[in-house]
Image 1 (cartoon, rainbow, N blue to C red):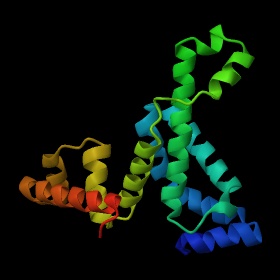
Image 2 (tube, one colour; image 1 turned 180 degrees about the horizontal axis):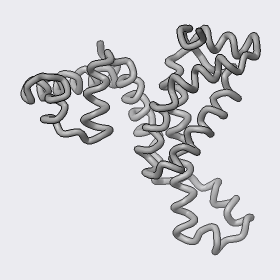
Image 3 (tube, helix red, strand yellow; image 1 turned 60 degrees about the vertical axis):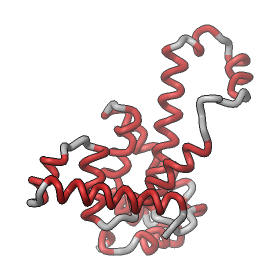
Image 4 (cartoon, one colour; image 1 turned 90 degrees about the horizontal axis):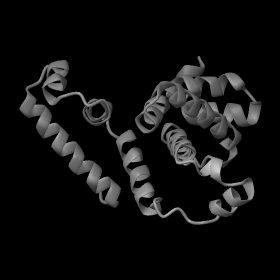
Amino acid sequence: MASQLSDIELIRQVLHENDSRAFGALMERYTARVLGAALRIVKDEENAAEVTQMAFIQAYKQLDSWRGENFGAWVTIIANHIALRLLERENRFRTGVSQSFGSDEIEKMADIPDEGYDEEKEQRLQSLEEAVNQLPEGDRQIIQWHYYENVPLAEIAARLGQTENNVKVRVFRIRERLKRKVKGEK
């Protein structure tokens, strides 16, 4: 029954009735999507599973700050941030930062702005992720296969029972719609 309720109804149950089964239904609904997003960033199934778990824990803790936007997109953005922090931490470890500096030095370094982080780019990526999540199911599936899973257009065409040229045109049109959405156009 919980799986038939909308995200908003499930979140209300979690917040007002402390119903953990309702949050479990949300997790069941969005785990594959969040795991896929995490896997694209960390490139390791075990780490992606951990990122997914951490994202849902953080979403649960911050559920009262949820503003009614697409829950799946929201928890995916949380996972993206966690995954990026994990990669950054691993890169620091690999380069010996954590071994060559004491904890005081590391804390001081944390206050230095990361020149590799581009907030504007991060916001564009979040906007793109939200725009993809708002696509009709068929279009979203094509984008998922082509860009996230690197499925060749010929195979997508075979899966859909369409010509490869038809799929190319659909991908082009979907990309154009996504560009307009990200730019804030209709």
